[in-house]
Amino acid sequence: MKPQLYRRTPFKLLFGRESNTKLPSVSRANKQEQDEFARQNDENAKTRMKTLADIRNKAKQSDIKEGDNVLIRNEVKENKLTPSFDPTPQTVVKKKGTMITVSNNNNEKHTTRNASFFKKTNHNAKFSDQMDDEEEELDINIQSKENYKAKTPAPIQNRPTRIRKPPSYLQDYECKVRGIIIP
Image 1 (cartoon, helix red, strand yellow):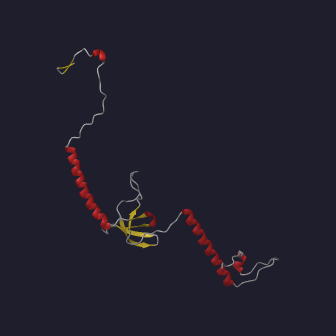
Image 2 (spheres, rainbow, N blue to C red):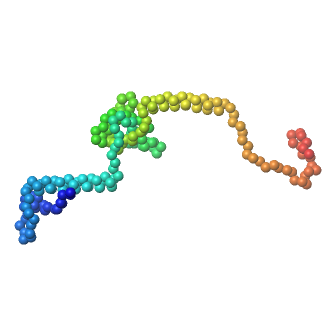
Image 3 (tube, rainbow, N blue to C red):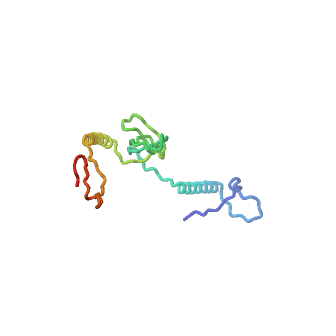
């Protein structure tokens, strides 16, 4: 059952009694009950304001935990081709509220930022190292294929042409092309 919410005047909260008026008053309660009511009312109002602000700002909880791999948002863009997030995944070392500390795979550099600067990724650090090795092998194979393609000349592709016939009134003439007589 919801507690009955009714407003208390600032005068009553301050002095613990109603002001002297000719209006009829409600029964008096003790001072502790009034203070508790004021605190509870304030807490409810603040909770409601926070909920409405979170809805308006589309806030959501961060699902990043310690040990997860994340990408860090680039704070400074050099040009328009710079990606929004640094493509090298880093591991979360410590999380305290919205403050997250990450380190690169070598544990040399630690970076601490707010949770809004990170994006969770599915890359594993070991998996990414293996992928780097495979990518290097793949690059070597691609380069050797490119070198092979560069050595072999590409066939010349001609555009389709129409078949040309000499006009019928010139059929009696002979034409010499490179010393060959064409009837």
